[in-house]
Length: 84
Image 1 (cartoon, helix red, strand yellow):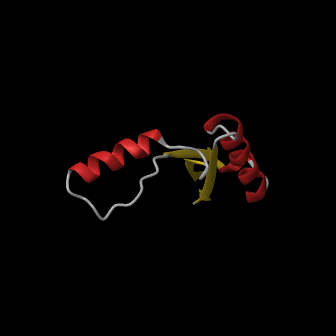
Image 2 (cartoon, helix red, strand yellow):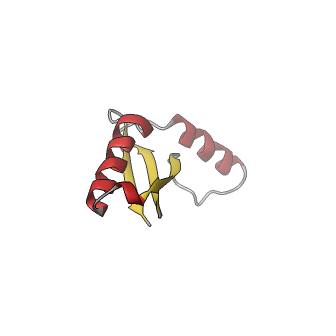
Image 3 (tube, one colour):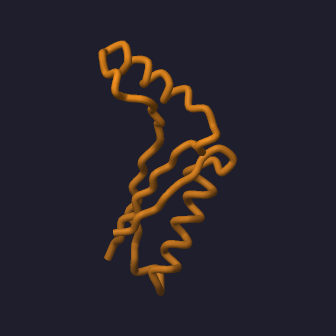
């Protein structure tokens, strides 16, 4: 049986987001004046073999480790995880 992990990685609030600013500029110049700010991030889906984990907590710990060590830069990014 497999389990899906959905990881959303975003820049920390205090980190400048140049890609978000570029998108905001395009939106404003396209007439979308109601948009006040844009932050751009990453969305990652992992499919994991659930049978290799004795508990859902161990599986979540592994996804957190993957997110922390591989999928994000903890100095400037934060992430959230959802398991389904």
